[in-house]
Image (cartoon, rainbow over all chains, first blue to last red; front, side, top):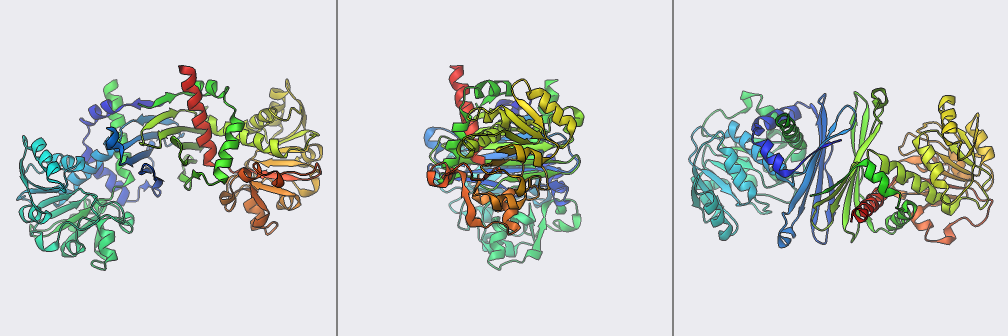
Length: 318
Length: 318
């Protein structure tokens, strides 16, 4: 009988997990081809509009395989229900038996995405950070800022959001811990920050190459489809190092896809996160370099976080 | 919070469900293009060997969407564990929220497959059945025979299995209810029966056209991949009516795939189960016709049975 873990227990368990370390291990497995990750399954709904993504796979010679179901139903807010829903399922890789059902309601996807941002910053943020720049004001904007603190305890933050109301809410919520400045434009964020995280579902570029300061690192989180784009292609052209979480995925989604499609950069420029963190020669070599990590989200992150939560939950139960 | 339904409660609930009627409704929705059923997700394991199939989809303008995970780990029997494992998940089509988790361990897949066989026989079995012929002696062989009784209360059975030991076990188990004859060859089954169900994972044809009696109906259940084949292609050539559960699936798996690939029959000969049961003109018109229904298994069957079990369970709980 599978262990059922509800959201409350998931949130409790995750507090004692080093999620950034788990993401690091996962990306290394992925880039070293130690994982099996088939194409994402997709189910679309028209009325009300919704999409379901099924990500699944396993690390070779491991104990488990994992299936994640994550959906977005964007009219849910009208009903007072979170738009993100879903669960993660853990099965035995030896017998196929169900091991655990994590009723995470999309929470673990939010967390593993923020942890990947922290991992990217750990390797690519400049030594001295002028300020942290955040594009967007949603749940991912908050989580990215909080996760960055693990390795970059910078308290000065510039934020831009699509509506002033949400941006002021963001500021009010995070002000006890941070010195938050509201920017009038994304460019104003860029001109004041050297560690930038973009978290919107924008389909038009928000950041221009001319506004990016020397030494800036950008983690692009928002774009995970072929339509979304937050960085003008010239930002990737200007960057000294451009990193994909998954090179295969970057061929059809995210900032890198757009920049290659525009002819602004070539495929040869792209390195993969799991390779880069193993090889100092591929990392930042001085404080003036501009670096971009493009995160589209890889199933190995779901595998790693589901396993970590399950193991912690079982250990604390004993 | 999703309702968790364990195998014991699933088995209890299913007793009051008319599963054959649910399959009929499902195949009609499917053939009338009222369903959304994306390609099956697949995950393969080498050591120990195993495969996982993820089937998912929904009926348009319905309340739910369904994801089924079903795996086969063929070394499980050495550990005393069933080779089939899995679960069915029901979510709201309006919000994406999880509704129910059916921990069926593969049982509902067995049941919906047997119910589709009974549905096929309901429309295509000859009026007078000489005997029921069963090829194979596993769980599906037994279930098919039991489900056939709902509409064809014939008690005379001819069975052939790959090992005599298993065939004798089959006979011993079912003898209280049936008059079971063990055949030395599949041909002997065919020569004595006019309602035949084939249930093996054979990759070589077991039944030849010359042995099939006039008026025989055959339901081919075993072959659900491009490699498996139980009927010689000439059986489909000799048949007056050849029916697929899913015409798109028959293009790359099952008996029909093999016969078309051999050039023995043409695509134009194939009709789809959900159309045939709505149109008497496509059904058997006399007792000498030979008919073949090729079942490869369609996600709409999983959707229908999951919904039926969930609704019954909730009603009996009140």
